[in-house]
Length: 171
Image (cartoon, rainbow, N blue to C red; front, side, top):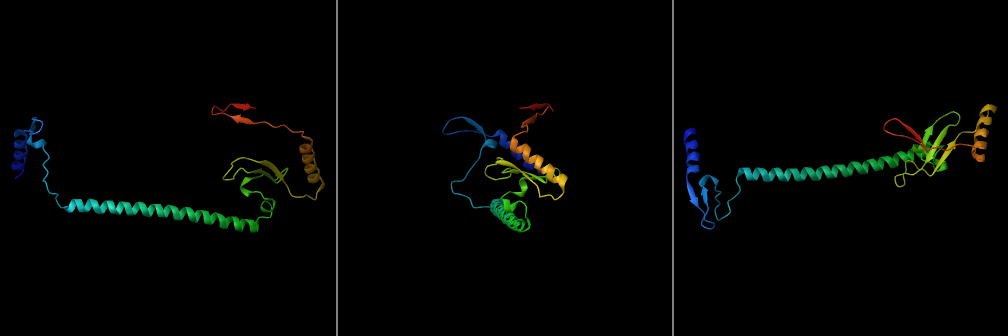
């Protein structure tokens, strides 16, 4: 049986024809023969059709899942902000975003880079030094010293850039 099929394909390569339109020679094995009427779908065609249908449904499902997850994240963020506003007595009453704050504790409690985490601007509007009111004299003296330094402008402002080679450049 195997030899018969092999011989058939070998024989096909030896049968030649002439194209009625362009008059070129061709092998029978190179031909693709199509009937005039359209053939019905066989089981493999049906299988491919069902597979495409399933893949499209999966794509729609993944898109829907992505959208649901995005909405759930947004809803969770809003709920977390509401809860944080109830708990937060430091930043929210002053209109500051807690994500913009960096904790120091000494000599001041927080440095707030106001606007750093805004979705829209991503620009720091101002820098807020935030500290609680101290009762002890040394802490109050230190607070007053920081206030006087800022009011008098007696501070240095530098932009320090570190490049990829580890070199520090001051501007």
